[in-house]
Image (tube, rainbow, N blue to C red; front, side, top):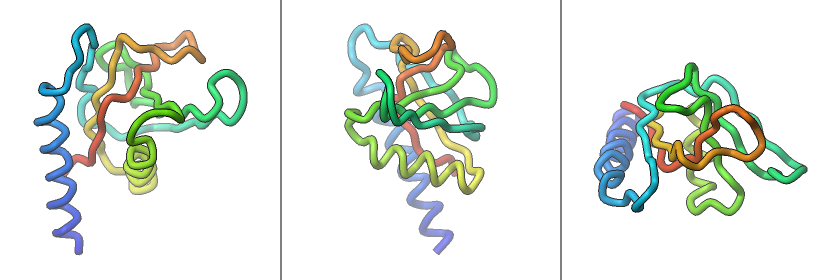
Length: 120
């Protein structure tokens, strides 16, 4: 079972890495935040940012202190499942974010999630 999981994880990482350059929108600033372990997560229930989820990085990378997901984001359920699985298992993720789209709920540099997947 573990072998199949690793193959699936490698496949996801390969798809994310391959698709990223092909799907970059004009004017966007997608950056590779690298292979990392998320150190903390927060979910906001109420206020102007209700439903947003913040995932903190171990250290700032490419202008991002954290990355965030909004309730209306396409793929949110899948991304949250991957994120929370990685947090619980203390597993590394490969994360890409848009450092030109900052979260409005903080003065810190929280970048909009673009893609993520398990690292092998």
